[in-house]
Length: 588
Image 1 (cartoon, helix red, strand yellow):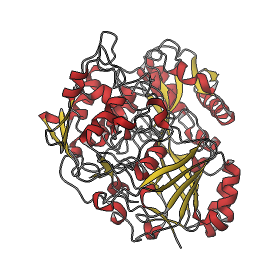
Image 2 (tube, rainbow, N blue to C red):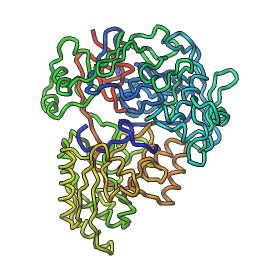
Image 3 (cartoon, rainbow, N blue to C red):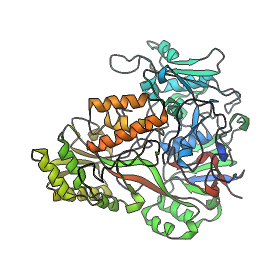
Image 4 (cartoon, rainbow, N blue to C red):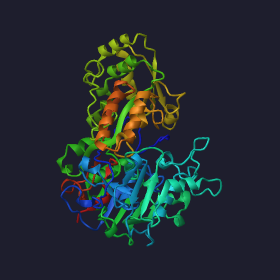
């Protein structure tokens, strides 16, 4: 992905704000997962489930434009079904497993992973009672190519489908709204519906061992052509899930009522517990915290979509009254500082930056242990198929580096570099916390004789600087989360020339070749070992300074439960670092 994202992909700020994976190959799984896929609670039908948020609206509810983790989880639970989905489970490893959703299986690869076929379920309906067809899925995918209309969404269909590129690098297929000089033949060949419309087949331009995870994204969800309103579809998409939008007023609320044409017989995945789902917008963050702590009346059936405010952390986590409805779990992101290899080409000097940094101080500034666990790479422990300790701080740099840094090792590495270290500049998005982080980084590097110039940037200018190879300086603050539960959306994106967020500007031929091999590997266990080794190699090369594996704290009302949670307790669902929307319920 070549464009900055505000949700699922990456974050640039340092303030306080679970990903796991199991086997990825093809095979049948029509069990869905649903409420029985974890925990012991069964859930309860009825009632109104309310979500409170400071946001003015959902970023995008149009399936091809939806690219924020929380919104993907919300829409896929209630409105937009996809070919495959993640299991509902509070166990990270289980939650990383795929089940069929619109498809009866999790996909069958052929040609070494360059072709993927999915068998479609019978009887799935739109909210108006019409059938959801293979053609609808194909049409929905086609919308991604209309980049002048369908903005902000993931573009994997453009980058992965076997469709030629024009001389300017764009696809020769321009989407369904262009009527002339449009390469529809290539799109029709790349996405095929079988003659009986029971199978959809994708032909890719490269081997993709985990394409069945790619299609969990709602950008591969169906849209009925006759109901497509282009850009306005974002305000009221047509539902094929258990609920439909009856009201959506940005700044006020969204109301979902039951979809009378949805059938549990065609959807073993979604238990659809509440009678009504309401999202309240533009609620002050402090007010949300106060209401959920008070836990009175209708707020007992409410949860916050936003993290707890810093002022609420101590009272909530020091009071056992909140024990069964508070959470403190990994979010999807790794926070790190990218080191520009073009401007700091000397390996020893890059390693010296890592050795000198007081990482404990950086974490303390942004919330201490609430902000996250100290990181040793860019793959998080809650991606267990791909994570292993890198040894970065226990000897990978030539000696141990405590959380507070190792100034003497840093000085030694600079001496071994064979050349004086020039002044370097740190780009970061300015706010009160990040200003303090920058000052702390400047101080700790200074102890090793590394002069650091600070370059605070307005929030709206940050990405235009750090993603510009000519303007980016030596260091840049960053954060990253996978698009789906595989480090295939981490390592290639951050460390190869074709990656969408390679702030390190790293371009190592041997490393790139190993990444390509790992991306094509369809044996998930073998692929995981490859990612572990590449994570270790990347940090040993000091392309980034890992700082923390982010955490998030939230609170729910006392009457809200999750059928897949431990004894019905709510939790952050690993695939999106979100609530497990699909099986949440209100206790009577």
